[in-house]
Amino acid sequence: MQYKAVIFDLDGVLVFTDKYHYLAWKKLADKLGIEFTEKDNDRLRGVSREESLDIILEKYKGEPISPEKKKEYLEEKNNTYRESLSEMNRGDVSDQVRQTLKNLKDAGYRLAIGSSSKNTAYILERCELTDCFEAVSDGTMITRSKPDPEVFLKAAELLSENPADCLVVEDADAGVTAAHAAGMDVAAIGAATASGRADHELSKFEDLYDILEG
Image (cartoon, rainbow, N blue to C red; front, side, top):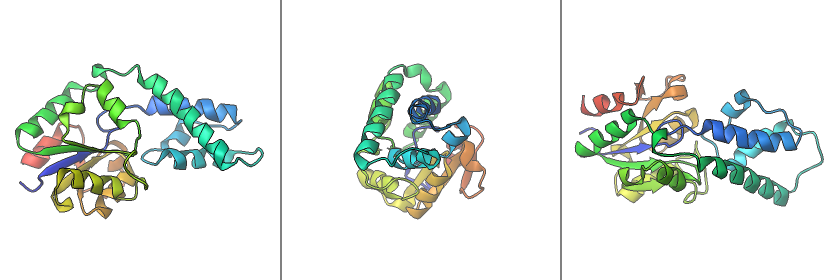
């Protein structure tokens, strides 16, 4: 096999929580008198919570915000977000994704998560995906978010695999950059295909099995 392990980004690849992020950030932006659209939300894909707040505050016109207040706002946003995540369930993961993950495991590939989200474990639990992965590298374990490669290197470390033997599946351009910086190939899906920088492109999730086994 060309690859021994597959490392998946979570949001936008296995599940879709964009609407929850958007509504939580918009609630905070409205409170601060900041215009925040779904197009603005697209800029937050693949970046950390702290960096997301800094992007939103680019349009802020009020008094300077202290670091302590920023932490309060981040906690407020995350509480709103987690409340909405409680609505997620097994049905939020498509049959195509579940079957492909099963097929990959049956074929001998080792599967891991590489996500900057600090809510990764909760989302996996809500969607009944936890048992699909040998390792989970997420925002609770890293100090630098994508496009830094730390989250993917941590996933490879947890699997005890060489980065060169890992394939990353990503939907964000920052994730493609991070995977390449980690010395890993990338299979892009969704918005990440636009740049043309990935090593493989997926028109649908199940194409991943054909790429790995073809």
